[in-house]
Image (cartoon, rainbow, N blue to C red; front, side, top):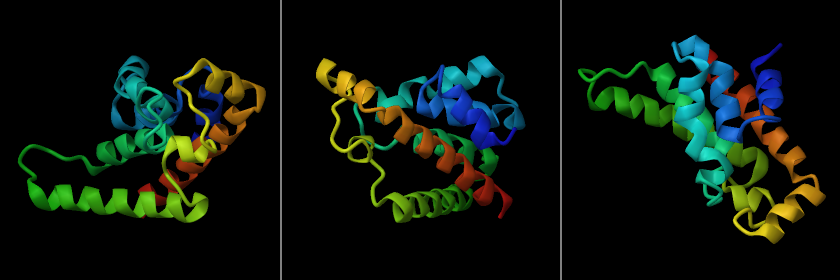
Length: 145
């Protein structure tokens, strides 16, 4: 099963950020609970605040793990990580034209009961599954370069 397929399957149980991070966690020495705890607050664009898409946030955590940054590395290594993040966000934005959860969900307000009802009744979770899948596919390409 690919990372993207695993993440989409995880999304039935966990939030978008957790789902993405969890599918890569073992590759970077994180156990399941560590991955779930690390990403729990990023779902729904940071606690349903609907800022940057949680799937993107989960992917950025993976990019940070991939950078293998160490205390002694300093600013050049940080700048390398930033460049990967910029590349990643630009690619997502090129495909979808936006990176914020609220915009990706066509203005649906996940902080309100009405918004959550709208999310369920209009199967917006399917849109999120697509974002989760695409984030993992992009990560696979980004990590192999």
